[in-house]
Image (cartoon, rainbow, N blue to C red; front, side, top):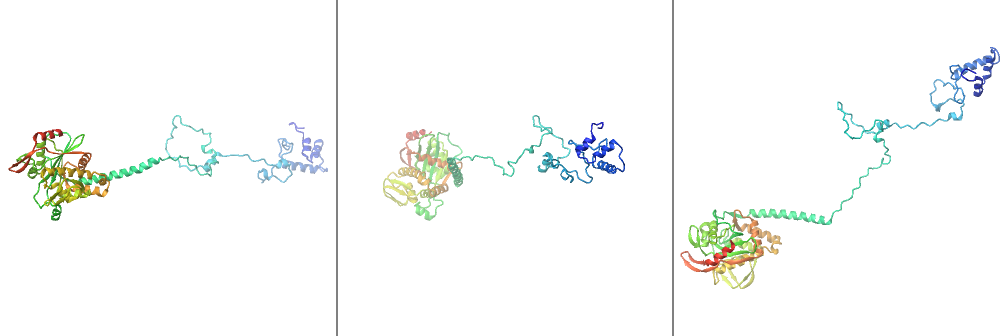
Length: 464
């Protein structure tokens, strides 16, 4: 036994060493160099020294099972699966499985998308206070397994389809139609307003403004713009000059209540500013619309706000554009000068007959009957123009607006919507009157109509 506690003989026997006896013999006495085991034992010892790993004492090292550790042959790779062909125990030939290793850095370097290189000389940003800081030892965020979602298309978030109210859809389409209709109406109104003939009809000095709105409506008997064929068709009796009025009416529209339409006979004897006492229609001849407006304001004390004038041809065209006017003739009228031969009774009058009906004086009361017929005809015309049969018919409506715009002469500050207000106010009801008459008189200017001063003044006061 050695000083390390090993027994070489016992170890040799356990390892099955065939040369153990020779070593024991050598230990008990000197081996004979020529004995049967002398030379062979020395050769075996040299062979053991080259085959086994020797310790510090010159003896082979043992493994945990007591077997000597053999030297690995030179040139053979250190791979446990390529062991030498020497006999080994089955347990020694069994190789242990490799340990499962996962290199996180190598995995991230292979699967992570390439990132742009950081710019140089950029100061590192300090994370905001309270921001999450990842520990250097913590695995990257992309280390979490994605096997469940890998190879499967990304799911869109579920969005509930908003229900649309059918009523809103209907009203939405209807709203667009209303908007288009309003735009068309506005454009058509502006186009019509641009076609009105405007003049400076109001005087520079007027009476103090009074309540309500007052219109001076004038029907001119001018033949201007009419051809000889049109004059013959309308029965105007040829050209009798420029600037005469057949019709003068005052329309008062109060803030509340019914409108009042007052006829002023054209032969009314009044004071014409700058010309003295004369017939009221002479003011139109002397000074045009301005002097006529000033004369009416002075005679009535009412402030005139708007002015509108229509000629013979214009009136006939307006009547034809609405398809005629229904008039109830009280008595037969036959007037070759006016070009009419009408029977008593209700009937529809077209352009030429309607014009002759409002111009004729071939009745018992002459001019007084005429102003009454003018009020009747004017009210019937406005009623027809504002009826649904006219407004609801695009052809009639456009023709009416077109002829009205071409026929009317208004003040320079008046517009087509002012004329529309006249029609609407009269369509809701209007009281027709004539200036109270006190009698007739022959003067230097001819036969004139005298007003009843007291009743006429009461009438004008009711409108102030």
